[in-house]
Image 1 (cartoon, rainbow, N blue to C red):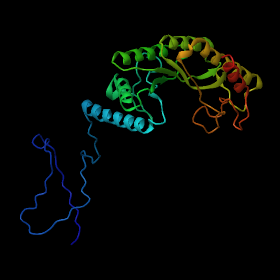
Image 2 (cartoon, helix red, strand yellow):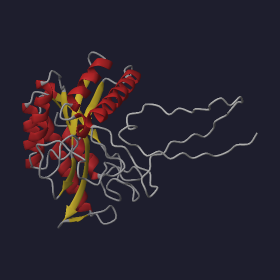
Image 3 (cartoon, rainbow, N blue to C red):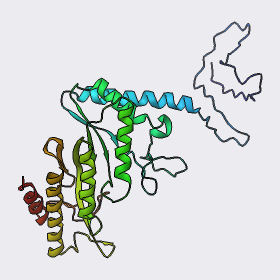
Image 4 (cartoon, rainbow, N blue to C red):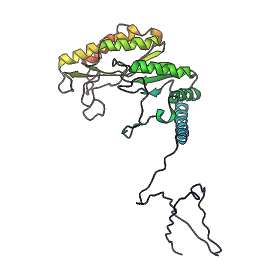
Length: 301
């Protein structure tokens, strides 16, 4: 009529390590037993909980199922409304190995970092495109997207090579997105034009997917409080050059469009370029010179 706690410690040996069950043998006692709050804990000699590492094959199976679950649910539910997808985002490594995929191996990852390729290998993107085709609309437009392609390094070439690999495995990549979080004083129009030329040469749709602009002077970031009218005009001129270059270099049938990342300048408490004058409008929605520069770039069409 009362609850009693029992603890049983078992040392796993060669004779017990493959046991698939734990049995309660109550013998010939003629009564009823009730069990509640049963807990199995694997521990070491000091009492600390241990984690059992799954094999690479087990991990691959689990992550593959998660990938299909995520894509199938997302694409199926959004199919009536969404006709284009950023299927694979930011796959390429940063310096110095920009021809390689990113990896979390031997890296102190933050809580929001996860690398499918560490479990599924190079073909993770092949599978992602296959699944998106399978569950989406027949005419959905599928993109791959990355940042820093205008940086003047190998990242743009590395991404293009990865697209070629995905297609060599039987999938079709419709377009390439370039984020373009540019910085006046660091990013050059020459590098931007070189990147657009390379992307256009693929024959794929080309999308500027996350355009915004910061500013540095002598290596120091300029914030909204200290930016001068002259610097704001320089940013406007740079926007003008960027937009004009897109329409000049990318053929009409390959232009998917330009998405402006920041409608307004960034608030002080923002996690992205906090307190910087990155928008086309100020925080009180006053049009900035950047708005004019962007609009004048579009007027060249």
